[in-house]
Length: 309
Image (tube, rainbow, N blue to C red; front, side):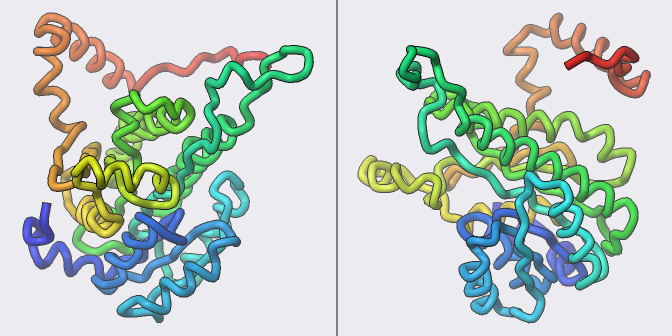
C-alpha cells in the first residue's frame, strides 16, 4: 500500500486530528508518531518514564515539534491511563485516533520445564504474567478508554474516530516458540474481532496491523540472521505508514493489514472468502446462521451467576 492509494483529502484529514500512540518511545511507535506529525496531526507519545529523554529527542526531530508532547504512562495502570487521556484532552482538546502499539516479548522461555526450585517444583512464570499484563490488559485498557473518550469528545472532521491495534503475524502463526508473546498477540486479534459490535454502536473504526519481522528492540537478536538469509525485513517507517493509512481510511473497521516486507495483505475482511475451502461450505453456512442468531440478540447473553473466585 502506498500513500497514493488514499485520496489527498483523506490524508489532509490528519491535520485536524489528535493522536495518542502508546509505546512511542522508539521503534514502530516512534515511526508512527513521526508519520502523523508529518501530516500535521497533534501527537501524544505515551511510554514508560525511562524512555522520556528518548521520546523528547524524537519530538525535537519532528517536522512540527510544537504539535507533539510526551506523557509518561504504564498502560497496565488504569489510573495512569485515565490521566493520559484526560491530559491529552486538556492539552489538545480531543482524542481522535489512538494507536495501541505498546507491547513486549518475554525475556526467558515460559515453557522451560527446567525452571524448578530446590525441591523440584516448577516455578510460576512471572515473565508470562508480565507479557499478558502489558500486551492484553494494557491493550484492553487502551481500547476501552479510547472508545469512552471518542464517543464523548472526538471532534474528527469528515471521518470516524479510529483505533488501531498493533498485533503481529504471531497473532495468526505460532511456530516461533515465544509462547506468551504468541498467545498475547492472538488475544489482540481476539480484541479486534470482539470489539466490532461496540465499534458499530459508537461509530468508531477499530482496525489492526500485523507486522512480520521488524528490526526493533525486541527483535534485535534475529536481525543479522534475517539479513544473511536474504529476507526482506519491514522497517518501523513502513509499518508506521500502514498504521497511518489504516487510521484514516474509511469503511475498513474490522480489517487487519499484514505487513511483511514488500507484501501487504488484508487478513480479516477476506477471511469469509477462504472459510468454505477450509471448513466446507456446509459448516460455513451453519456457522453463519448461528452467528446471526447471536448477533440478533445483541451478542452472547452474560451469565447471571457470577463465578466464585
